[in-house]
Image (cartoon, rainbow, N blue to C red):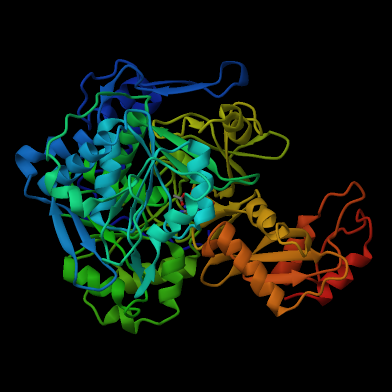
Length: 640
Ligand code: 6R9
């Protein structure tokens, strides 16, 4: 075996060591029902469930339920139950864009702020089951807004602040939202982000009854009478107690939109009980959580990682969680480590794209800080290349902190494949092994399940509490997207290799999803944006490897007859995508071509486009099925 193996450090074995992990695996095999009910005891329930999982992935009996007869409220689990003993303990440390200007909220303060928000929502007639959009910076009020929805049973849908007004509009329409919670502006890397202005634009064609605006920068913004409410103007009058709703475990908690291979983003629905159990359980398992920890997950709450490991997982466990509203290179490339030292961060969880960007700046900005408080490092969002893993481990962690490479998806609610820092020897670049109760299988295109060391498409053979329950408004699409490709299995969309030690190596998406800096982007969305430009006839978008972003977007565009492709048009097309989706989806490269390579039946041969984008032009494979093989030469010549 060629890869390096990093052994498990002694001092991590106290909580879940190799023996304990083996015992857990045996337990879940022998009696899953008991094992999963046992995990549910981490939470406080009004009525403890008698049922754990009740599910079938088969088409004629398709259903997924967890803890169905249990009743609970997640805000109570994240707040109320900690008050008696830990009311004065820090729940959130807000670390804004400008270092050192942060503030801390105790569990009591977060509780009171949540109740205020909840009362404000109620006073606007918002009730259990209503949809509320959250379009906010990473400020503690954003966590309070999420928890307030959970408290009254409203379903929140957080939209990342980097998405355009058009994207926000699409999501508001899709889930028929009645309110938006936002801030006047955000600030990132020293630059303002016009959140409220974006909301106004998004609401031009489809309004909502209520917009709540939290003051972040104090910018002068227009307010629409009767609709817009300044939170700071009404805050003092709002009561700091609010009776929580007793929710059924299967009541929806939130909708989070994510890109897939076809069409517009899907509203991934997570329900209350199973999601909460999974977020809390995986937080404790994977991060070896201890009471004295200061936990920093750098993800934005606009992504699932922020939901599960900035807000719900840590708070359900009574932890202290850092909310970071900045970027890794502002004011300089030492920002993460300066902040780690200042706040005493013990667990640090970030994305490979950030690690690679910092690695490129060399060791000095890291070594300028002690980082001695850190004891555990984590990675999430995309495959981490072994070089970046080794750098993270050796330079950031001084070779003394385990690195947990955690594989999972928006749809999964929480981590599925990851080392236990006290029990799993690490191989750089491998997410290692499934958590107890998770059953990954590798499948070939003929539906054959592969045994032993093999490469194939990654599926999951059984359900776990945090699995999504439906696509909002389209249950059929839920089944079709995830359960129809391989009979009886959940298909992840990822390719994967399993080595002779049973370690999993995720190789990336095998569908038409591009992972740019850990953000999922559907090729279909970018293509539909490009073709909406009047000069564009056709577009095909593929990924190519990018040193920092992991993958970047390469767009092949054919223009209408008589149109000329030049840099000015490239700029316009870029603007179009920024307007329709957001800056994160803007193509890195735009390649104007007279034609796209198609089969005789008219299918675009993306395989060839990928090779050209990757620069593998000497090895295009079989091009004999092309309707016009001459197209390829023109494409190769025009490579960007
Ligand atoms: C949590 C999150 C999911 C996709 C997933 C995969 C990629 C995430 C990874 C990883 C390799 C890891 N991915 N973590 N690939 N190793 N540790 O990122 O959710 O935004 O839905 O993305 O990200 O391709 O399918 P999401």
